Length: 580
Image (tube, rainbow, N blue to C red):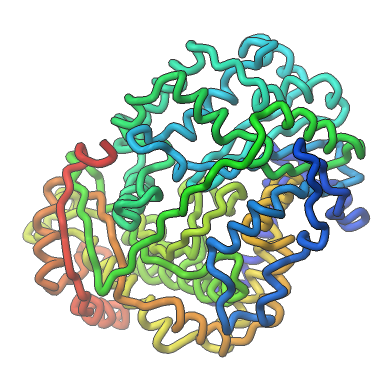
């Protein structure tokens, strides 16, 4: 924790620089703070008006100030969203901005993929956004938009698909209709379908399993953690599922799910007051109605550790990702308390956190070690969480970035020529031990105050641009909130260390975890034996490194090497057999 105050300053500075990137920041924000406008509800094609009173934050009505009781079940929250909140636009007026952002969140994700056609939802969105409209080909559209520097893209996750359009307000009249046409009047050319189908097949067959073992281990964990449910397969699909998809499937998925009654509209920037009605008029061209939404698959629970070792030839290390069901989401006020505990344990890409300090900083085992209380998309690329990935089925996870295998260590250090396994067993033990110690002992008052102070500033970096501000507001709607960033800040202000320690004990059960380890084929069998037999796993240092380590670290290594893990099951999976 000694680095935490410095981290606050560094990341506030990073935020100032990153705001000058692709998304335009809000100008003169202090002088003209963003205002969320509660507009007149949009009239749908059925002539019905939503109840304005239902736009109130349903979450705060049923909860105490901070989570000592749980809110309604997540499915109840999702029902409220679909029945009422999705009919009310999310508006964010920014008078000093020269940019307009439009987001269309459809309640369709990979859990809506038909069996045997896994990947259909994401491929549908990609064909729509990488194609043309009924009036314009892909090339004509790009020629029109290129001088305007307009950005348009789709994000697809387990439960929602979000289409985003960003452009300068001066180009509104010129490009609005063509941009919205990508959603309301997609061209669906055979060439566009074939191109995106080929890209997806290449990703699943080649890129996923060869470019990043870290991402590979995360998707493998979800396959294990959600086994047998619609949450299990990657959002991009499976190899057999993608091969089963044709252009007619794309058109059917579009007409079934991209409907006028299945969308939440979001708009941000300095825009004319009638723009929301123009967007609604375009959306009314879609198929009417609300499709029947499937129940989201739930993560599994475990009594002890269940490990899946993915044997891959040529793996340069052991990439470890573990997770377990978490009955908590942003919809619960207790989430703020667990944010503090998780930040201290393993805040993403932060050197002050416990896992980072113990595994990387003190022992130089890998590049970093983190923990999460919700899905963090593309953690290897994103310093900050991005909006557009809300989920009602949640899990806690620990990410141990690749550590060395025995073969790798022996090739570098002759003094380690007799070791049988690399660092994976030791690293897993250390992470599990630190998690256990945190829950058992609790946070100290000092660590609590420092971590809470950091988070209170850090969460403001999540919304540096109009697109991100609007995105988090729309995610808030998904969880039954109005403004998650504002509300979480207020909850953090009210927190006590006693509440954080109590919430940890209620929602975290150290020792129980599903774990996936992507490692070299040479490491798979020895690691399996070591885990199943709970053998001691002494840390293997080069002589040069060991000579400069303190006695306290070496003494702690001895305790970690024998820390008991309740391993119930270890299975080795051939990498070629996954995601077929």
